[in-house]
Amino acid sequence: MTGVRQDAWTKEEDELLANVVLQYIREGGTQLEAFAEVGRRLSRTAAACGFRWNSCVRKQYKEEIEQAKQERKMRKKETPSTKESEGQEKVEAAVKSHLSWAEVLAFLQAEEQKARDARRTADENRALKNDMEQLQQMVTKLQMEKESLQKQLAAIQEEYKTLLSIMERARKMVTDSGKPAPNAVAEGVDEG
Image (cartoon, rainbow, N blue to C red; front, side, top):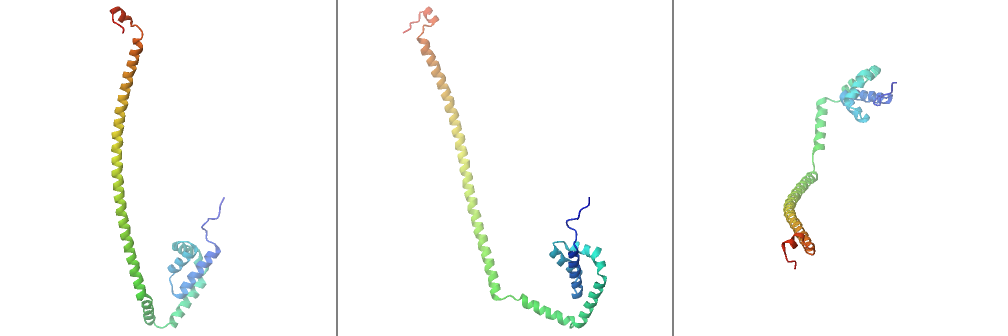
């Protein structure tokens, strides 16, 4: 039984791939850039888009590809010299990258806040380490006290057993003293 793969390409995805690649060809972009854009839109890798384009889709759009290449050539002839346009692009990029004093100030304030936060975190860490050391010392002290108390308890229990043993012997002696001992009468021991 054959099923449809979950990651199989749909007709709509093939059309999107073709349209984006043709647009990039017309506008002078690269196919790699087109594959990356389609990949973002379809949640696929650029490599998967490139493979699909080269293995299946490109064959279906041969005429459109040639037409897009012709349009790109026509566009190049119409545009002013590349050096002028590159210079203009550099100026535009410089204007865009020019930072205002407010942006610089905001950046510096943010960095200062990060430094304050880092110092505060370091101080908190030191305090927590001190607390932890004190707690460890307290645990050690309590363990020593526990061992001492266990030894004392063992000694007291031993003394208690000894005391019980003595009391038991004394009780037996008292109960036995109320009865005449068979050997005691024979020996002439005075029971008093």
